[in-house]
Length: 64
Image (cartoon, rainbow, N blue to C red; front, side, top):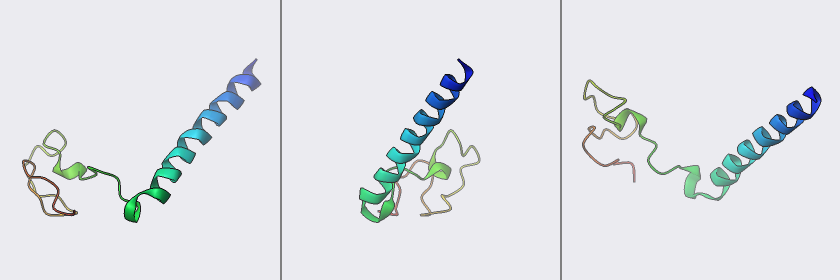
């Protein structure tokens, strides 16, 4: 019983990582859409600019 649960968990983790890898391979330059986490006003309460593109929390990502 325990071995079955472990094997199913490993299978689901492999599928998740595989899906992410496929997305990175087939996306232009391996970029994910909307990855400016420091540009998110919920995560960035101080209102600092994004460390990747320089956009403020209320602006769109300038990397594109």
